[in-house]
Image 1 (cartoon, one colour):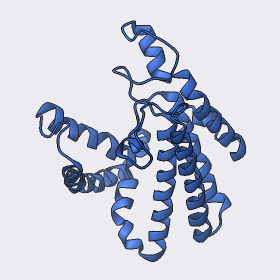
Image 2: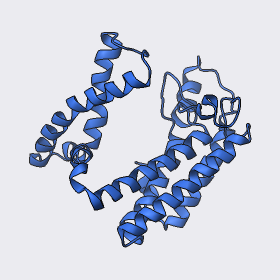
Image 3: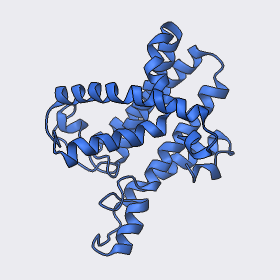
Length: 235
């Protein structure tokens, strides 16, 4: 976000160009050899390019994803004047991103980290987030845009269904930090279901986590609204 402040004033076309250039270059940067046991090499590479013990979210690829978010926000909030236009443009852009991801995946080379057996197999959809492959980044961007478009559509027909999202969205940074802390207590400190279970158990965990986090988020929003501290209000 700090880096994004340096380009947020540029026209969206320039921002998009920067993001696409970064996404295209990052897979090549992953080929830079380094010794993770040498602290300065580890710190430099895992801050900007790779992932590991030092840092899970390298700046360069996630900066590109953030820029795409800024470009889409410009469309949703300024350029596209109706919800119908926002929904249609969102879905259209998302489909392009996902199709491009599939093309990258089918190439079996550039932009991929893990191999796959055949199109549509489990291994076809299995790739890497830490650091993100180009395939993952494009897929993630597409699904994120689809999600926002669906939320806009729900807001048109059944706005009350968005109450939960609204509560969480008002304190997004608090929710993000707190839910990781809570998961850390149960999974790593207590050892409860750490890297265990299947999809069903994961979904049950999501429901339990939301049952805990929604009241916490509602409480913190009250704190945030009453506070004059800029750090608290930013959360």
